[in-house]
Length: 88
Image (tube, rainbow, N blue to C red; front, side):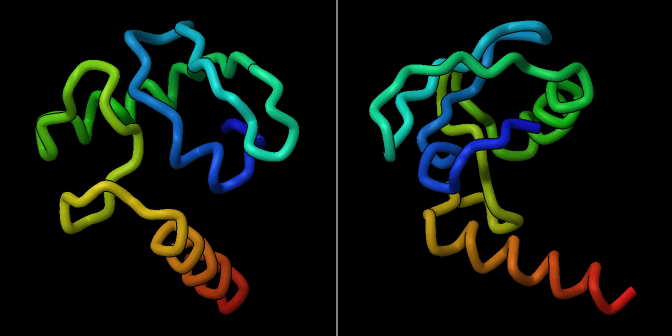
């Protein structure tokens, strides 16, 4: 939904609602961009919030173990998902 690099995604914080903008300082360029929150993305945030007790403006991405994703963990998870998709 965002088109951002993994490091930029890890730095993202929880938006306040659908249609909100997530400010991101891009690692590579230092540019500030504002990512709109897609309604489907917001629905997913709302679905997982009770599971992990996400604080307002807290980290956006959590793993299945309830821990905040690190850059390496997210990269590994995405590789696994892509590999699984290729096998289908």
